Structure formats: C-alpha cells, structure tokens
Amino acid sequence: MNELKIKTEISAVPRKEISSVVIRFAGDSGDGIQITGSRFTDTTALAGNDLATFPDFPAEIRAPVGTTFGVSAFQINFGSRRIETAGDDPDVLVALNPAALMVNLARLKPGGMIIVDSGTFSDRNLKKAGYLANPLEDGSLSAYSVVDIDITKHVLESVKEFGLTQKEGLRCKNFWVLGLVYWIYGRDRSDTIDWLRRKFAKRPEIADANIAALNAGHIFGEASEVSGLTHLYTIPAAEMPHGLYRTVTGGEALAWGLVAGAELANLKIFFGSYPITPASPVLHTLAKMKQFGVKTFQAEDEIAAVCSAIGASYAGSLGITSSSGPGIALKGEAIGLAISTELPLIIVNSQRAGPSTGMPTKTEQSDLYQAVYGRNGDAPVVVLAAHGPSDCFDVAIEACRLATKYMTPVMLLTDGYIGNAAEPWLIPSVADRTPFPIRFETNPEGFAPFNRNPETLARQWAVPGTPGLEHRIGGIEKEDGSGNISYEPANHQRMTDLRRDKILNIANDIPEQTVESGESSGALAVVGWGSTYGPISRAVDNKLAEGKKVSHIHLRHIWPLPRNLGDLLRGFDKVIVPEMNDGQLKTVLRDQYLIDAQPLTKVTGQPFKISEIERAIDAALEN
Image (cartoon, rainbow, N blue to C red):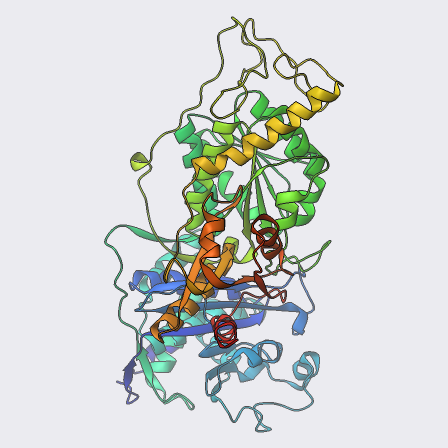
C-alpha cells in the first residue's frame, strides 16, 4: 500500500491537553457521514471519554449529489468532564464538499477549524451549493483555521492497488478523513480496523481498501505539516463510576428497556409497528431479540399495527406499538379502544417536527398536547417522557409497570434527537430490579370483567380461553362490573369517572418531584421535560457556578403529574419552561396549578443550545 510506505516523522506540532471538543462531520448523504460519526463515537468511548452525539441527516432518500438538500451531518461532543449535550457550536467542522460547508459554516465557532476536501470544490459543485465564488480563495473563511486538503486525490491514491473503480474508491473517503481526525486527537485505529474486517468479512477487498484509506489519512497527518493546524490535541479520560459501559442510542435503550420490563412483569412482548422516521430503530432492535420471546409484526398501516398490539394484550401478552406524531394521530381511535377495554398497551411516540409530514428527520417536542389530550371523549392515559438515550431504558421499564398494574395504555414520549443520539451507558443488572409480576384471573367464582382492584381501580385481566371466564369487552360503553353493553346515563358517568380516577390516582404510586440542581425554592425554576434535559442541566449548573439563584426541575411523569409538583413550583418567584414546541407544557402547568409559567420555545428542528437557556435565565433574573 503506497501510503503505508511513506516514512513517518515525529510531528513538530505540539499536543495540547483540552477538557472537551465538539466536532461536526458533514458531507453528502452518500459520503458515509453517519458511519464516520459512529466509528469515532465508539473509539472515543473506548478511550474513556464522556460523550454525547447528534446525528443530523436529510429527509430526502437521495437528494441530488452535491446539493444542500442532501447534506448529512454528525456532531459529537466528548471530553474529560461530564458531557450533557452534543455541544452548542462545533470547534471543528469537517466538510467533504461545498454544500456541506454552505449548510454548516454558520454553526462553527469563530476561530474554529475547518477541514475541507478541496478536491470537490469544482465550479459545478460550487454552483450546486449556491456559491458565487470559491470560499477557499475569496477570503471569506479568513476568520477560521482552514485545513485545505485534496482528500479526493489522496484517497484514490491510497486505494488504487485494490482495483476499485473511481466511484468505489471515493466511498473510502470517509475513512481517510477519520484517520486524519484520529491523528489530530490521538485516537486508536485498531477498533475501527477490527470493525471493518467484521463488517466486510465477505468482501475482504472492501475492508482492505477502507483500512488503507484510514491508515493513509493518519499517516498524512503524521508525515505532513498541515497548513492551518497549530496544535494536536489530547483529551484525558473522564472520571466515571466503575463498571461495564457501552455506547447506546435512545432507540436501542428503549427496546432493551421494554424487554426488561416485560421480563419483570413475567410477560411476553408483542410489538406491532409500521415503519416511520424516527421511530423505526425500535422495531429494528426488537426484531433481533427473538431469544427473549419477543414477537415483532410490521403491519400494513398504523391502524393495523396498534390494533394487533391491543389484540395481543387481550390474549395475555404485553402489547406495544410505536410511531411518530402523524402515525399516533392515525392510531387515535384504537388507543381509545384500549382505554375503553382497559387493557395494558404501551405507545412509543418518537416525536418529530410537524404538523403533517413536517420535517421527518428533525427533532421536536410538539406532541405533548396529543399525548395528554389528543383523543375523542374523556380518554385519559399515562404519559411518560425520557430525557436522554440511556434514560429510555428506565422509562420503558416504568411504562411496563404502570401499564400492567393499572390495566391502561401508557404513552412514552421520546424524540428524534434522543432516538438517534448516543452516549455511554453503565450497563445495569436487571436482577437488581424489583419484579412486578402480573396476575391473570383464573377463578370463575364471582368473576366479572369489570370487577376492580379497590386500591388501583384496575379491572381483572382474564385471558380468553380460560374455562368459566368467558366475557365481552369492546368499544361500546360497558356496564360497570358485568361488562354488558350499557347506554344508561348514570353508568356512563360512573365509568368515565372510574377511568379518570384510575389514572389520576397513579400520582400516589410515582415518586414525588425532586430538584435536579439548585435549591428547592428560590428566585427561578427552569422546568423541562424530555430531551431539553442536557442543555438545561448544563446552563443551570453554569449559572449556579456564577452564584445565580436558579434551580432545574425535570419531569418524567407528564400525566398524571407528581403529587407535590404544584407546591414545589409555588416555592419559586418565577418559572420558565424551555420546550421545542410552542409552549405546551407551560399550558398544562398553568391549567393545573394557575402558575404563570413563562415559555421559552424553539421549533427549528434543532435542539436547544446551552447559551440560549443561559440567556433566558439571565433575562428572567434581571427582570
């Protein structure tokens, strides 16, 4: 391999120790950006750094090559300190074509580093990206440190001995870049090499070509004085609790949590779903877990998916379905059926930017109204929200516990950012969890389908086919107790009240709300839910370090709300609620507690920045 024959030299560029760095890889959707990011993530985790990632890809299946519509990006924040977010603004932007530079330059910190493939900056590609002049030549990048390399040329040289076509050779470009970035930040290549050999075990020539490109990029850095590069960097390992770790995405952790929750309930899972961005990874992960008794069913549409899950619960399994906002809307009537029949059902809602089709690959928190209120009739369900990738595991277990104990649908809210992002996860032991095994009714004496547990108000769960327990349930209103069809006004009032009280009483079975950081009363509370946890946490910690009187409260249980939440919020002079919607939790808090909570809203399809919340905290305290 020609690149490996280059005599390496000890670089004269010094290594500088830093506590954290944010890198954003960007290129065409065919450039393997997400693979690049995931490999860098795993290598960084093995180095012992804490990290958070943000995959940011286009909705188009295959936009025209070189256009801004097809730009894919992957951002990672890693360091030796606690990392809560994927970072506000990148320190480094790796742009593999002009369109990637055009779309992502505004995000880069002033004075940040740009690593750019000058080999793609042809007149044609510049025009596609919307440039009137070449930014590498017109001085418009003078505020940044530009590492200008003809990566296209170098990668083709590094793989030419493998007999690949030019198109196949250029597919190795992402690994050439990865090798260069590994060199800059002192990363080990061995895990990536092992991964390539496993990935392309049936195509060893492809593995060898990518490995050659990876090594060539690394050697290029070692053997060259790269213009624009003033330092190499080292990032010490983070101090983290001892144990066995792995990187985990929200989609993976959610699937594993559902399996763990079903095990703790002593039930088998039936997962009925219809593919939709960004919910599909949960289906993909569960489909690989047949060894745990998981049954997955890819239905022909959203309605069939949820109805199959309800049928599975009726038959004695734990029925689960998943979608995003548009699909949840289609499932609405069937969710009402599960409420009426009082069967356990878990509905995973991986939120995306809307309404309608909206921006399918961008993140948002705009389905809270839909989760709490969005069905015909008085139709309450339990609503939970995960705040990060690893938290999905615990929230999924809680969803299983509440759904089976109270015979009710539970909606579990996550979003596109949580589902696709990754972070280190200290692998837990399910053996340490308290089981909550369900009890099917088997005694026919005095049985009636709507006999209730006086403590939980949950009705009995009788599996069809159990001798002597024949019964009817369905969407038409039933008589309390017997389950016979009833149109009696007083009975409908009673059944509506019972379904409501069953859900509201769950507030007595969930933890009281605590304060994440800061005091339990004071000048200002920042109240969040879901994926705003990271930026709120970091912003509040930064302001506490400045001596500001601010606290962070984060909700997992959205409905019913924790029983002490009202009193907790009244202990603060002001409450602000950052949300990636137009102010939905703010409305719920005002409705329930008559608290003048002030919204901080954002619907750009991008997560909050720490700096945005810091400015809101400063403004609230000044006023």
